Image 1: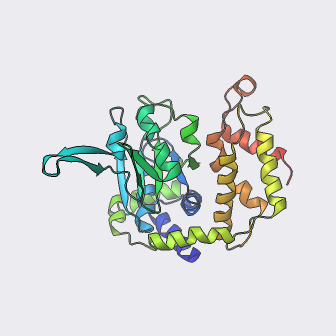
Image 2: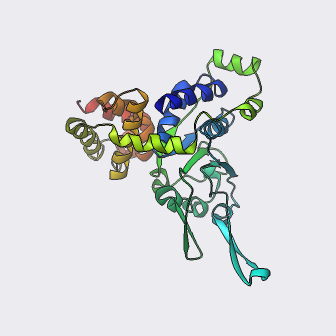
Image 3: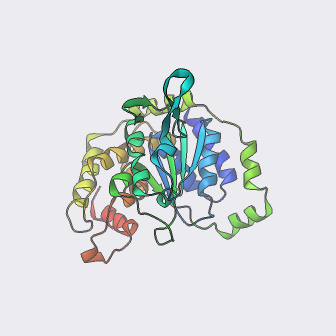
Amino acid sequence: MFNQLHAAARQVSQVVVGKDQQVRLALTCLLAGGHLLIDDVPGVGKTTLAHALALTLGLRFNRVQFTSDLLPADVAGISVYEREKNGFVFHPGPIFTQVLLADEINRATPKTQSGLLEAMEERQVTADGTTRALPEPFFVIATQNPSHQVGTFPLPESQLDRFLMCLSLGYPDAAAERALLMGEDRRAMLRTLEPVMGPEQLLDAQRALRGIHASGALVDYLQALAQSSRSGQLFAEGLSPRATLALLQAARAWAALEGRDHVIPEDIQALLVPVCAHRLRPLKSVHGGGASRDLVLQLQKSVPV
């Protein structure tokens, strides 16, 4: 089943050219059962990546364009009175899918953003006093524009903590950009993508992660990283227990894609920035608001294996 994931990565990389590492990280995130935040400037392929992942994995896909006037009911659904049935009938919103693309999520108000919290954490939606389960598997892939752009609302820490990973695609290098300019239209390529695997196979692969061994020594290393992040020297607040669990689960997925049945420290190190940087707020009084990514790398160097 993990060979199918490698085939999926190759197919997505044919559409999102020059971003093999980001594609592999995104697949690792979905294999670990987490949600993905793609933070970058418009036009670098964030939406294309999300769409290509859903099509390649054979998952039902809905896209919601987040705007300042979007309401929580527009995403979750609403109950409408129907005279024929003499009562209210719930009409599910676009969140009832397997992959929800929350496009430009930080253009919605905090009220609408918070409407995703229950769905992302518990895979369910409560509306009108009734709780409804979401399909399995369920992933949120959100795109986010830089916070300095007009019309954006920063995601609160509680929302950021629900995303297993945060990636940036960045501008393509010269060779990749030339391939984009000379090659087939990306939208046309999306229409030709065939599923490499299906939802049941992905769920089987997720269940197989339980067999990926993490030794006591590796857990010691993970705890040391968490404790160091909480020391108050680099960050205002340290990694939460949810973050350490997410890092370990992502490391299991990364190890599985590497063809190993056990996690090694290099797996933790490969994922430390995408899993942790968006969860950690620099200690501004000391670092002047320096980039979290650089401080996470500094954290990694400061903790011996």
